[in-house]
Amino acid sequence: MSFLPVCGKKLLLHDILTPGFATRSSGMHRISVRVDDTLFRQMQRRAYGANLTLSEFVRQVLGEAADPNGRYIYSSQDEVLATAIQILTLLATSIGARAPELLERGMADARTILGERGLLDPDQDQ
Image (cartoon, rainbow, N blue to C red; front, side, top):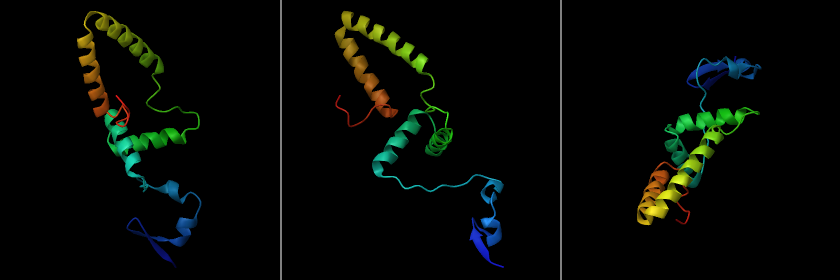
């Protein structure tokens, strides 16, 4: 009999080659993926922006990618986002007409917060 070490266990080669072997796992599977520094930083920013650990973020993105009928998981509230943008645009226009320096300071603060949450491209001209 041939044994292979898999995840710290000795398994029969026959078991590994049997269809459905991978689905008989009792726990989580580990996937190792290499990414470049830029992609890694982008994923960290997106995870932080979603208030998730990097592992939770990647797990959810992979789950969404595996669903052929799914949409990107963090854009499912498009109508709410559109309404919020319209309200904030009206507010910014009103503040800008009354106190342009206050609007400028508020916009700078917003850029800082969005940048910290990974929602702005750090290389983008401001």
